[in-house]
Image (cartoon, rainbow, N blue to C red; front, top):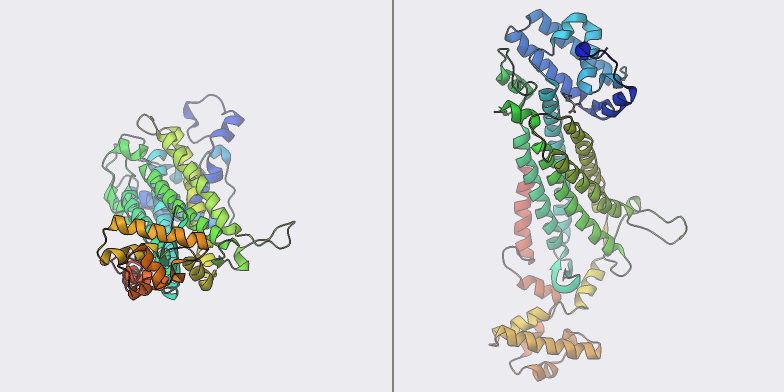
Amino acid sequence: MKLWGGRFTKETDKKVDEFHSSISFDQRLYRQDILGSMAHARMLGTCGIISQEEADKIIKGLEEVLQDIEEGKVEFDITAEDIHMNIERLLIAKIGDTGKKLHTARSRNDQVALDTRMYLKEEINNTVKLLKELQKVLVELAKEHLDTVMPGYTHLQKAQPVTLAHHLMAYFEMFQRDVERLLDCYRRTDVMPLGSGALAGTTFPIDRQQVARELGFAKISANSLDAVSDRDFVIEFTAAASLIMMHLSRFAEELVLWSSDEFSFVEMDDAYSTGSSIMPQKKNPDVAELVRGKTGRVYGNLVAMLTMMKSLPLAYNKDMQEDKEALFDTIDTVQGCLSVFIPMLKSMRVNRERMLESTRRGFTNATDVADYLVRKGLPFRDAHRVVGQMVLFCLSRGIYLEDLTLEEFRQFSAVIDQDIFEMLSVKSCVERRNVPGGPAREQVLETIKRAEKLIESD
Ligand code: ARG
């Protein structure tokens, strides 16, 4: 018999039971569901809506149900549809008729919103923890590589010299924005919907603040219709997760490129690489590739939920049950990716010589020579053209700017002196970029100091 079977004269079709049951996936919410029900029962008792003894009996019964589930003693039943009705059924089986009073002044519509919010609050915190772990590894690596010069790129063409520390700290900034987005999303998730009933509140004199306090919510929702039909917080989280994945995918792509023989900037540890079933020589950066690839499913989840919610009339609609698999998959994917990315990065070997060599062989000091000419009095546009001609000359001879003699330099511009040679080392190019936010050692050290404070803060 269905818990709602009263007005029905027929059993649900078996196919329909399978079709609309969500227990296979929403059983994840069992702990939140039980804690929410305990707070609800306690409040019903304090407000005199059920007796104190009944409240105690329900709470004790729920404790036992929780224990049974955690000990693996429970088999969920698809004919009970979802986690909410499965638990109510288990409670009634355990304590009898008193259990039937639990659902007074409540609907599954406010209940599922409550459970999802409680669950997501925890998972937002877990995701933030992982992001901070990743940021910590970035800072550690950056400290080791303050003087590891590498080419900075635009259009994936060598542009100007930076350091690996500066490059890694760019990712620190992205993940810092991700942390801030998650904490912001947390504030809107931290709203207690119970008491909204099915859509129009309840006729019972409940105390919503008591429930919010017991469950650790910052505030209660302001409108019952909105509270049962709002999934913004799920979508916001998935949007924030999409950005995390986008950042991880850019990082992963760079690591894949850098692992290639053509770059040879880094080598992933054997523990984070795999081989080929046919080519004995291969060592593939599969972990980074898979992180890059999994970005697509999180974007997919975001679009699925935006589309599912689009045009839904108020208030609750069954469509909204589709939020759960998308949310759970997003959480699993983003946390799973972070969990492997962190140790992979930590164990990665860096080829400093190769990075330096690649910076030298790439005219990455050309802007500095142009800046030198500007300091000697040339307008920048003219200096740009002069250095362009120098590069063309070098290219025709297979040499670099640092290979030119003073006489050769002077053929391009008479303002050039012996001090031109101080402009040429890529290390000096980095150190001259001593502006806030720039790659000079001093500036990167500043950002590292700030980063360490940010990691400690919440
Ligand atoms: N399993 C449902 C969900 O996840 C719970 C709410 C069901 N409410 C209802 N009126 N059918 O959305």
